[in-house]
Image (tube, rainbow, N blue to C red; front, side, top):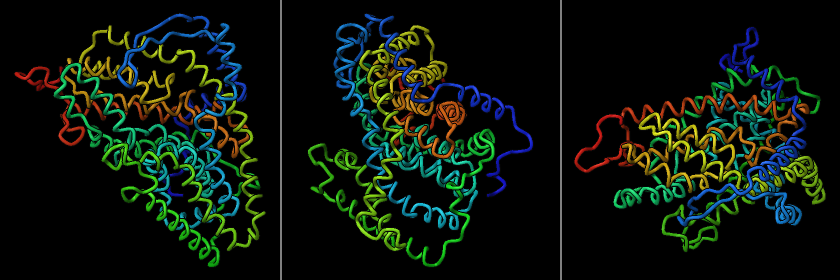
Length: 531
């Protein structure tokens, strides 16, 4: 471990003491399962208190709709809770993807393939770059939808444990990159055209001609720069705050660092043979999307490659499972840990057995999320907050900053990025256009606010599995441990990302190809200074 990666042990900073106190207080909370039960009961109570409160909003297709808070204790509400309980559990977004992916990862882990890969990785990658590589990988994982949550987060913990560092710090670094840096990337992802279409629709109410030029690449330059910003900030927060807060990690007997032993020549050879098989699987996956008419491309969805990639994204969990399962099984055979098909079935079953606590937690968390959405509490509170900000009468940069803060706050109550932008864009895009700020800048501000609180939102669908991953290494870890680890990232990302956006605005740098930060309110006089 390099000096730059060493946790401070002699003197703890004020920030470390503060976040350590947050961890202590948070871990006095009930077990995560009990906590989700309490949150569910609170949602039921709030639905009764605010029953009948309504707002007008636009849906994703641009059609108007009225959202009213529904009581969950009325006749219809009670009937819905009882009849939808199983459906809420089955439809809990991360449940299926997590279990499917963990089959492949679990077999690969129990065969020793992942541990051997980490031992080889430790030899090849300088220790001083491991944290930055992990955060950067998390940010880039958004190109694969939500795969980073169930693949990179546990691997981050394993990687840190293999180096003798606290595995929860590795988990936190990966989670911060995947979730906190969700909007950033070096390439255009599926989120870009989705948000751009909603921004275009909202901007058309002010200037239909201008709106026609809003495209998926409208924030590309800014998001490329954001990728490196999140990587740098996430690395500093991990090494300077999170690891010192967590303190030294003492592995139990079954958690000894895998990197302690030098791989033998035969182990190294077997690993690279297995790795070659994963490359063959990857080539097969590429072949499934590489040409028009390929099985994982849908030409009916549009002419661009990104528009046609729906089937690929829908099958991503199965593809990732294959990427781990095939080399894992091959490595197990070469290492003589797998001798027949029964051994494979036993390893897969053991992987699912280890997920039992997650399945139980997912049932309760699924009810909580479904109750919150069905009651319309999130939508109504978000629109009320937007109207309040609109009535403040702010202009320019102060309005932009408040807008980012409101987006961050709304993200704690409404999980879907596109759903929030569907009813926020018609309010804030015209408002800030009149103030002289371009729709693309407003969209960039929304993406900043929407990302930075993902990691501390109770509505984050993947929060239960992150807690389960943490408890694998620290049985006492609870919501307080996770909150104290993720809160520094959320604060640091929010401050640094907002400052970068303001600097971008001050220097009037293009947000994307041909996209300016300012909007010409009138053709006669384009604003040359901040409004």
